[in-house]
Length: 115
Image (cartoon, rainbow, N blue to C red):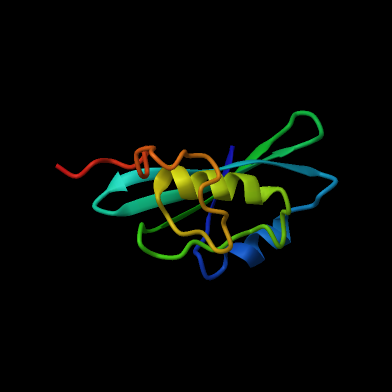
């Protein structure tokens, strides 16, 4: 897997320079709670052609910072962004709230709980 370090400031341009709709499949967006309110955000892509190489864009940021959306570049990303917004309790630009969780669900169930 190819790992590409990026930042919120350059994410959209970095993804746009890489992504070709007829060559790459957007798999998902992931968040890893690193503790101390820091999250590693990950965007996964896979080539359509064999051997189906995988590429992951990675950016680390404080959990309270607005995460840029890539849906302008990768239209189906809205689903993963809405899911991650609910499950990690983070703000993602233009993400739909209440997409995954019921009203009475635990808030941000994938985040580490403070002791």
